[in-house]
Amino acid sequence: MRTKILILLSLGALLGFSSCSEEEITPSADNRLVEFPQGNNSYDAEIVQIYQKYGTQMLYRYSDAMFRWQITDQLGYVSRPADEQYVDAAVRFIKNNCFQFYREDSLKAYLPYRIYLARDLGRLFQYSGLDAAGNNVSIRDTIWHTAATNGYANLCFGLACQRLTTLSDDSLRLAKGELNAALLTNAISQGNIRVPTTFTKEEVSNVNWSNYVGSYNTYGLLEYLDAKTFTAAQDFVVFLKYLIAYPKEMFDERYTIKTFDTSGRIARKAKAAKDWMLSEYGIDLEAMAEAAIE
Image 1 (cartoon, rainbow, N blue to C red):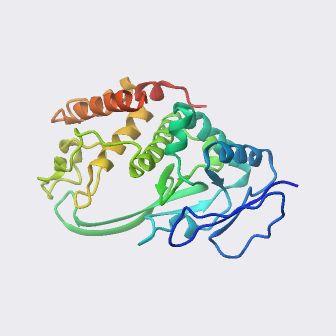
Image 2 (image 1 turned 90 degrees about the vertical axis):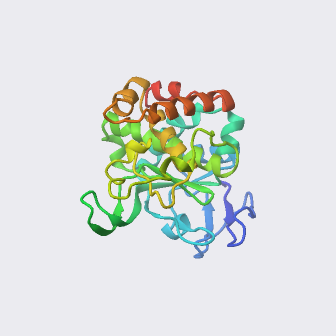
Image 3 (image 1 turned 180 degrees about the vertical axis):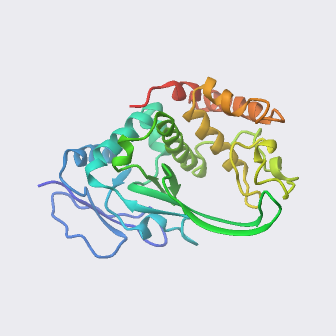
């Protein structure tokens, strides 16, 4: 009889859990109760091994409410649970393009309690302010096809679907970058990785709102970040994402050329991020970027 672990996530503390072994458990309708493992396929055995080694559950059956739950509000993402035909491929991608880059003790510290495997993951986008033409606009949308993100004590990988087998090389590289960035965001939030002092909130302290949306790069940023809620950690994680996604030559061709990095701040911050991660945590971002996607 296979072992099933029943975990109750209390609203007050995500750490509490009770478990039973060698005993069949009937799943509850309460969406905080999770049957684990969730099946008896070959990939379920792999998922159990990951749990036993790192203390992290991979779930491919879950409610979106579980994924989005946070203490004070809901996560700004929505997801659709995995296409179970592609759970094996998703687990393999995570192991080969994320887990393998970290020491076992570090990975155990960086990982959250759960990794949700989704067939799609969407970011809820809201913007109110000026557009590139200086007009007042209010935009709400869901941007689907995000590869990965992190929530409250969890990660979500949004490619447990047929699309994982058809992505272009460039899209696979970006998925690798987003997945590792989500993991490292969790590590930062837990205090296991610190943000280098090169990254500061002052990057956008003197924003010209009339042109910020279309010219974020001139402020030393790699992608648009809301200047009103901007943090140094956000900026740092975006750099980690692209430095892991693209080998040095590709990164430089896209982001440190003078027409994009007009102030030279992007090149300076990229070097600082690579040096910091290698010297402080033994994480070689360039080697990660150069590694073939498997």
